[in-house]
Image (cartoon, rainbow, N blue to C red; front, top):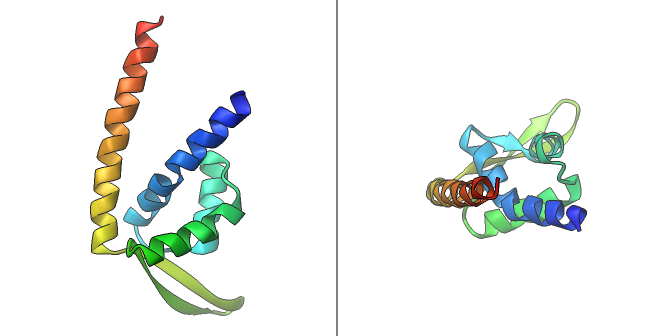
Length: 108
């Protein structure tokens, strides 16, 4: 049961985590995936479909940059809509976690 809760929490927060990373500046897919693997244990395979969906939803824009060490890299950056959605999600997240923290404190 513990594993499934952790998995669901990660999945639920993944969009917000990607938006947060991109709010700091543009980044390419592998860099986003590596950061999320290290920070929250999300698998690399889950990032690329999410990035495609975010692009289709107009939250991120992309550009290709030639790389001297392989194929071109696709860089992602937030669009104005993505910035607005990030701010809304961040506010919702803070309210939600504060409420959960309050409930957990009351149990002690």
